[in-house]
Amino acid sequence: MKCIKIIFFICLVVLIAGCSSDSENEGILSDNSSATSYEKEILDLINNHRTSNGLSKLEILDIIKTQTNAHTDYMINAGAISHDKFSERSSYLQANAQATGTAENVASGYSTAQSVVNGWINSEGHRKNIEGNYTHFHLTAKQSAAGKWYYTNIFIRQ
Image (cartoon, rainbow, N blue to C red; front, side):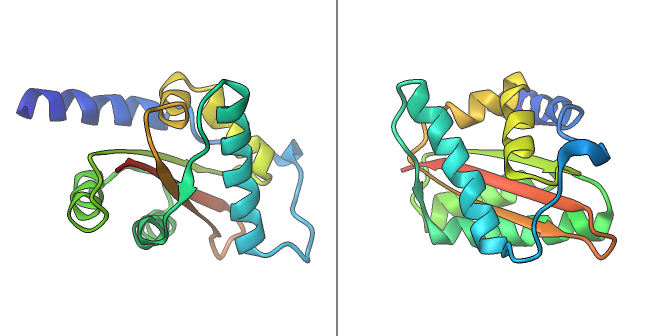
């Protein structure tokens, strides 16, 4: 089991390299776009991708949001994306949301819903999470004080 956890951690670290974009040409959000509607747009795009591939839609589960919020704040404070302490988030969701499987996608720098979802879909490991055998998900998208977007998306299977 310890070997599997180590391999899983290494895979997560490798995935981080494909998740960052500092391109200024990806578009901006309109001033009237709230974080809640922005997050919903991202979640809808993920579900649209799933259904276009014959997979079931994932349901939003609020308890996941507690973990995505905390981790996104952590990444903003660190100024870098990471999967630090994912095992703790996973354990929390196993204990409190009856999760039997968990996965996480993180990203930063993308400034539109479509661009962050495209970034994940174009990364084999992140796409595998999006298309995985999960039942629920949630997401946090927040901007740093400098205006850079950070994202944490967690998937669980109940």
